[in-house]
Image 1 (cartoon, rainbow, N blue to C red):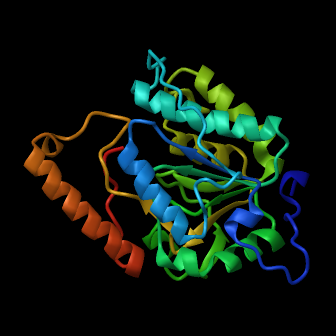
Image 2 (tube, one colour; image 1 turned 90 degrees about the vertical axis):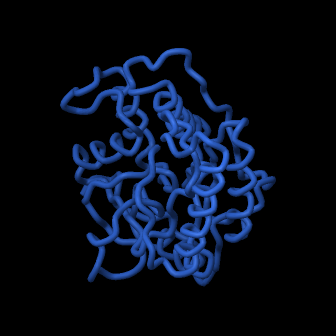
Length: 265
């Protein structure tokens, strides 16, 4: 195995830490006009003992490109740039491990209860990328609980951690992805989760962990990346859909038994 994935970020012996202690930065991808998502994420972060006003928490400028530049939409391109900029700044700032969140992330009660164990696992085991949020479900049945290596492709890149060892290679790959034409064999102008799937495929030495069970999913809310579906048009329809999503999200938070379907991005 290459030096990139040969060691963990070791914690002092016996020291218990939470996410806010372990990560050098927690970066949130957020569009200023989505006040609904900001308020909801503020509550979610409190559930895992993170104050959105903490100095380690950053909400960087969200790019709003005038053109899709070959991506499927301007929103998808802007989202890609947000992820890229966060990683590039972490590399330039020579940070340690970082946590990246999109503003529609919600967290299970299990994530709140077990964050010290999760940090201990990250601090005492080798890893390069760790996806706390993902769309894997049945693929993980029968596997150990916790943070485990897994090579399956999945959707969502809304809650993940990155180790500084892998940042140079990851940033370089995203730069190439933005330059390549759509459909390029090594990836070109893709959704960010597709980029991560291909990056892992082309770099099999990278230690990619996923949480089992999944600890974060995307809150049911209107998409900022593409056009909204027809049922989110009329006010009454939006109210009913919003209520149904809230019930579904809370059921998942508490039980983890109802895995929300992938909603339009």
